[in-house]
Image (cartoon, rainbow, N blue to C red):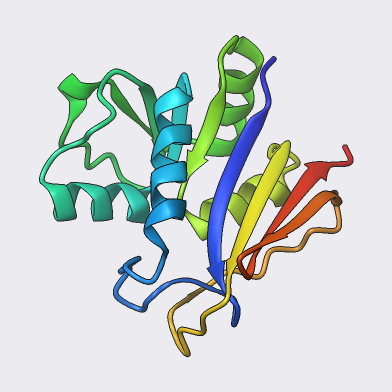
Length: 169
C-alpha cells in the first residue's frame, strides 16, 4: 500500500482560494511545485469542485496519462476517455481500496473538503500545508481537524511556511 498525500496552499488567514475558486494569489514557484508533484504521481484523487474548476478554466483534463478519481455526488464525467473515474458510491471506502491496491504514489489534487474528509476517515497519510504570507480576507476556508496527525517537519523560506503532518494512525 502506498501513502496518500495532499499538498495544500493556504493564505495566512486560512483560505485556500478566493470565493470564486481563483488561485491567482499563489506564487508561481508554488504552482510549479504542485504541478511537478501532480505529474510525478501515479494516481490523482480530486474533489468535484477542483475537477470542475480545472475543466472550466482550461477546457480539458491535462493529466490523462494518470489514473484519476473524482469524489462526487454525481457522475458528471466529461472526460471518460481521459482515464477519469467518478467515485459516487461510498467514496471513502473506494479510496481505501485504491490505496490497498496501489503500488504507486497517490496525491490529492486540491479540494479542502476532500482533504478534511480523508483526514476524518483516517485515509490521509501525509499533509503538506504551505502557508503563504498573504491575506485573502474571504474565500474558501481550510481549517482541518489535525488531531489524528502529527507535525513532522516545519520549514520557513522567504516568508513561506511549510508544515508537514503525518498520520498517527
